Length: 629
Image (cartoon, rainbow, N blue to C red; front, side, top):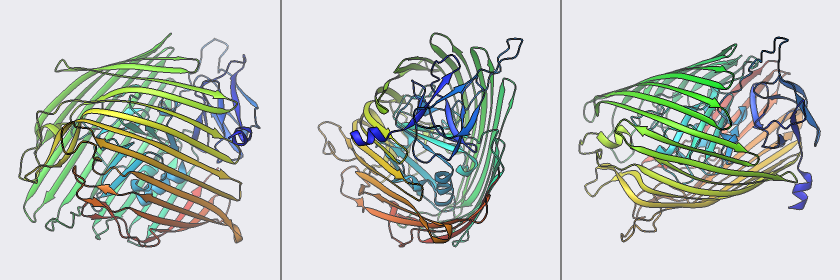
């Protein structure tokens, strides 16, 4: 351990008066690698390029050669002779500042998600388990640290975009339009609205300095996509092919801009495709269409910040066999909040949602939120409450301590959070196959974690232990008659440990993760007590390696494994463990143009993502990448 500490390296970011600047962004070419800690120190991860940029609100950007170990980067405030301060606002989505167990995915990882799907996160990010199934319009379920997928908040620049209808984004957008993605494990993120008691996924748009770049890829399955970015905007056009040959198309548009002290953004997405059912169900001809639009504006004036944002979503499902279904869901949401930065930071917000569905009928939901945030030295704390129109009050809070000792970072956190039932949970009509439950209670989760991290020019590592206890956990499973319906588990308990590390010598790099996670039903005096919750693998793991080859070719290999998963609450049925391997050959044809030849599931491993749905089969792809200056 002492050897790793001595190898640690990084640099400091200070104000011109010598004071440290915590939370400064460190990145390059429109993507962020991480942030400075409470002492203004940034630990190198070993993957930063030779030239980097440093950005902090209220200061001029700094760009230059990667600072040496212990070097100080000095940022200066931007001030006119009149004394007027120009507020240079970074993306407000910074979960890593408040939740230590946050993974930041860059361009390469986002490309993997866009090409291979969100299930590529299995084994790549500790504590994450993903199921993706259902054809060219897939269903994606992301579980963090043994939590239910509905306990994960989905955000864009810190704005929650989940629907009160089902707790998921109202549309399907391509991750390729974003510059980076934060995946935070642990609940009670500041500003949350009661959907992220297990954690959150925050998508960050390209910076205004993003150079022109684009990616074109063709797959052996018949799929293809194009994604391009430039100066805070991005677009994606895709053709998706399901495992059984179903066909689908999608497009995503993202644009952001800043005008003096105002920041605005828009995300639009549309997708249409055929549905694939499980192998145990009758064959159907289901077809789904989804559309989503999200717009936001932020006004900053001295210590005040005001947000106004709105979203709309549409989903149509059509089917004629084995029986006729014509189901339409519509979502409209309006949100506003005001933030004041004083001795403590206070944010108050109001959210109003209108839902219309041929299945669940019309519903309107309004609630307000209040959060108080305080940072002092190595401590961070937030506390908040959600005030519902039904006069319900639900509290949340988080306290985090993070300290750097000899460039070794120690952290510990405790939190408590909640999740309210969705409209589908409560009101889904009984049709013999599924049924809602209007008697569901609000979930309550509490947990803690403790971890240690180190980094150097060539070696990085992180270890974290955690546990979460949830009361009244909502879970959808078949009842005694075979009808899928949600119910409250009186108590569940998740515990585990996450390990990750790697090295980078310049010509070769390797990394690995391992997550051990036991999530059990703790309903007392029942046969289920102590049994594992469905679809929570006991372990996941991953290995990655990049090796320089002759002719300036880079060989990239990934192996990801998932443990056995039970599919019911009595542990009588399960899906077997599996591992799959991916590989790619990459070469730069010029300074700005690169080419990739990749293979997914190269061994053509047969496995099931979920009960009755096979995972992705072997495929090949040819990709052209252009990155401007």
